[in-house]
Image 1 (cartoon, rainbow, N blue to C red):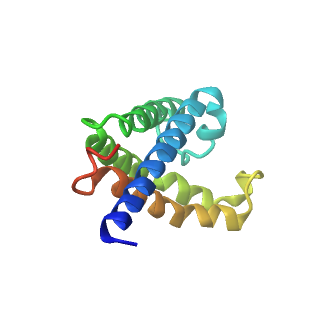
Image 2 (image 1 turned 90 degrees about the vertical axis):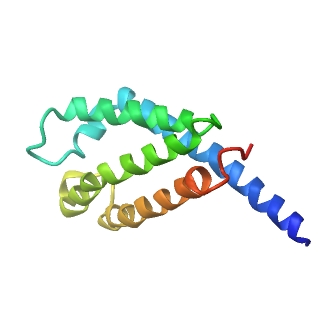
Length: 137
């Protein structure tokens, strides 16, 4: 495979992943409004207004997901999604430390969510924030 063929394959993978991440974040964001109770339970005890936090994070997930598909907004959307993933990380830690509250997940599943957050951050950066990705279609 030539260098240009390899470059095209990488670009095609990046575009496919961008669409997948856009769908994932948009669907997850919309689900914050369909099943808010599921997300409210993830909010650590003592945090103010958990339902509002769920709605705000849902709105930003949808905006970020859709933004990945708009070339002029892609980089901003990517950095916004990375910030959101970092902001919600304490909820993932809370879940891992309190597995008895989450019957739908095994303890191993709750622990696996922690590094998955890092993988998502890396993938969002690759498709949206790395130099030159704004014009990848």
